[in-house]
Image (cartoon, rainbow, N blue to C red; front, side, top):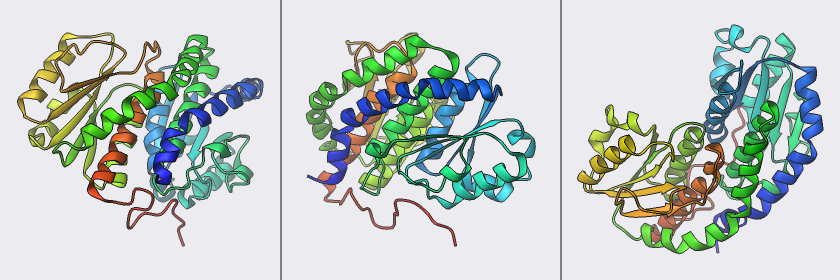
Length: 346
């Protein structure tokens, strides 16, 4: 068994620890938000963590009287003058597996020295380089991935961010939904791993992931998993927005994975019909048990009420499908050629 599979399949253990850890830190987090009552957030990340930052932007910008922006670490490092007004008087949240990525460390240093912003660091490595610039450190070393491509670390960073947003707005229902998604995670993975292995054996060589709302950034990372792990093109779009151009290259070798919203049927159903006409494989994922749109395969993720919490089982679908495709193609998912676990600039 490759390390990547071990890390994907052990996510439920790490997720339980992450939930308990963040809840233990709840009073400290609430005290931080009282000390820094800003209503503007900046999310900084690189690569996978930047994609998660996009989910953070959506989560926090949906909170009352709150604005949020996601900025790639390298973008800020090069264009920090352009972002001056964006960054002023904002709480900065950095996401990182290692806490050693140069773009994030240098950006945090610039922001702290020039503007003195309060910084929350969510990282998966003890004694990381971000700690010296952070006012609140959430360090979860039990989630750290040893394989180059992030899987377990992505799921736990996303979950910690869901809980951070829920604590910020005092949303007990969202916390309960996250806990429910975690409690079902082990059984869900065992049920659907064989399904995803069978899916990987089918004839497709590129992937499109469609998802909206707070799951959108996470879904983009899920599309990246196909690129990094299976070394096949993976792309992500919003559901209905996919018709506005990108759909023209969807063909009979395309796997399209769609996260359906439980609050609407007709518009989503029409999109699935259009996708099926193109001849590729269409997989729907939702909190509805029935295959409402006659997709090639429907995956039921459980009755999870919170939109953001739906991302916890959804990212597994993408990660495991990418892993199983990598196995079928004879690749090494733990160390794809040309990738490093984190980037250090000289």
